[in-house]
Image 1 (cartoon, helix red, strand yellow):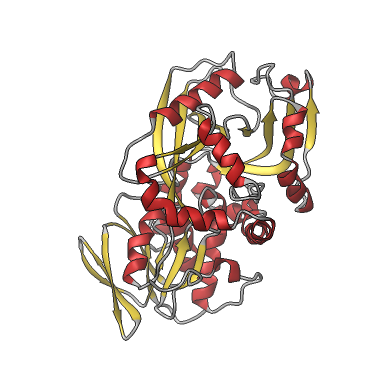
Image 2: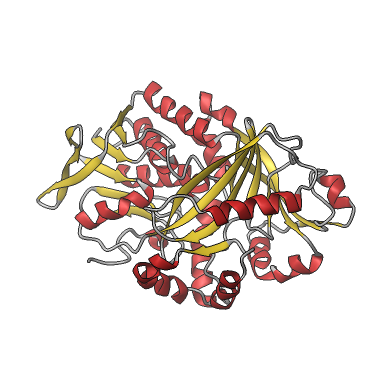
Length: 416
């Protein structure tokens, strides 16, 4: 173990909490800061999936054509706030620049190492703690209306199969035998084995924060306003509750990391994928395993307090509230896919997935400032959080990691 240090972690989502726990287990004096408390942002309102299979980025070859087709279709899972387009355009151009075969291959090669062992990483983080009860083992299915629709996704399935996740296909009436909740419109299931999900993301984050406290860490509710560097190294974090001195810091505040990176002189092209969910209370049916409804591009996950339906992509501002169109679309596809499902009520939620142009997170030290990045995970934050936390803790400890961190270099987008 290196000499114990005073380390402040900014952001109590899954990346921040995981990093704080691993640093505390290494013997450091760790304080976790968040303006709203643990799990209040994107770590709360996700589909709860440990998405080891999510190695295919959105910006794959053909995205321009597909995206335009989606935007022209009111029943597609892609939305754009057109008033925000001028501000987002530079990011969007860079995002589309990676939508080619070479770019997609690089992104996939970067996603595989931080995703495909995520169930084991969550188990390692929670083993022997009260948080372990939130991690469930499960298979995962892609629900298609036809075999032809599955075949049209051959690009992604090739890479998943190469990564050891070849699907088992279930077709025809056997689909409803495997998943009785599905209506007859769904005629093909592509089932991948040995995955997992979280039974209550908000409860999970609160339990992990409690683990940190029980293991000797500190949790404080405070809003970070500035970072103070002395001779180029972090020396304190400024908050609305006062100044906190530190030897090193970790920035894991999701989309809210962007203004703090500016204070460090880095230009991080980070934009929000606005994600919505409906959480169905007292559903009359539950799927046996989580699934992706491919027509609506949203995940459906059985949880201990209802059925979570989360997804869609809306490109736009973090200043605006929920999109009625996105929520109505999820409702439409719930009724379309699960025709016999009833429920008492549907809780609505909006959150912001922090997305980079190359669909890869930022992990590692920013220049030589002593500030370490752990954000930018797009829609894979819950999945990759524990491994991200372990990697950052290893870097701070000076331990050699067993994978190439170059794809996640926190400095790769340059100075502003």
